[in-house]
Amino acid sequence: MNKNYPKIPVEISARHIHLSQKDLESLFGKGYQLKILRKLQSTNQFAAEETLDIQVGLKKISGVRIVGPVRKQTQVELSLTDAIYLGLAVPFKESGDLKNTPGATLINAQRKIKLSKGIIIMLRHIHCNPEEAKRLNLKQGEIVSVEIKGKRSLVFNKVKVRVGDKWKLCLHLDTDEGNAAGMVKKGVGYLIK
Ligand SMILES: [Zn+2]
Image 1 (cartoon, helix red, strand yellow):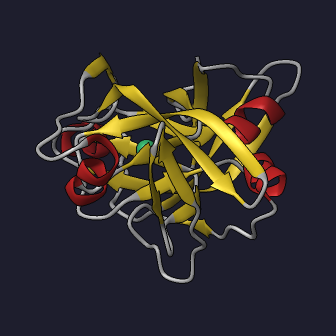
Image 2 (cartoon, rainbow, N blue to C red):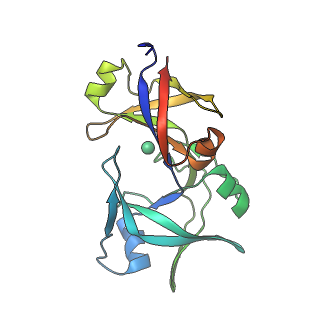
C-alpha cells in the first residue's frame, strides 16, 4: 500500500430533507418527534422513518427521506439530476448556506408547506474528528482530492474537509457523483493532497 494515499471510506448520500422543528410540526402535528429508522455511521444523525414528497409546479419527487435530528433551518439536499427533473436552478452549496436558494412545496399526505428557500446541491466534503484530522494531517476547511479506483476510476477535486467531535472519517458524495464513479451506497477512496 502506498502510505501517501490513505484510504477514506465513502458514503453516497441519496436526496434527503433536514427539517426545522417548526416545519416538522407544520407537516406532522404539534410536538411531533421523528422516528429513527437507522443511525448514520459517519455523522451523529439518523435516517427517519418519515418521508415527504417534494413538488415544484407539476413535477414531484415522492418518498424523500427525512434525516434527523431537527435543525435550525429546513434544508433539502438534491442531486443535479433531481434539480433538472424539477426544473429548478439549484446552486452548489455547503450545508447551512441557504442564501439565494430556491424553495419547493413539501408534502405529507394532506399537510403541506411552501418553502421560500432551502434547496441545495451539497458540495462534496470529508467528515472527520480531530484525532483523524491529526493522523491524516488534515485541517478544517482544507481542500483536498480523493481518487476512486475501479472501472469508472476518477479523481474528485475540491473536496472540503470538515472537522467535528462527533464525526467519523468519511467522504460524502451525492448519487450523481457516486454514479459517475460507479459507486453505489458506499465504497472507498484514496486521499490525495
Ligand atoms: Zn456530510
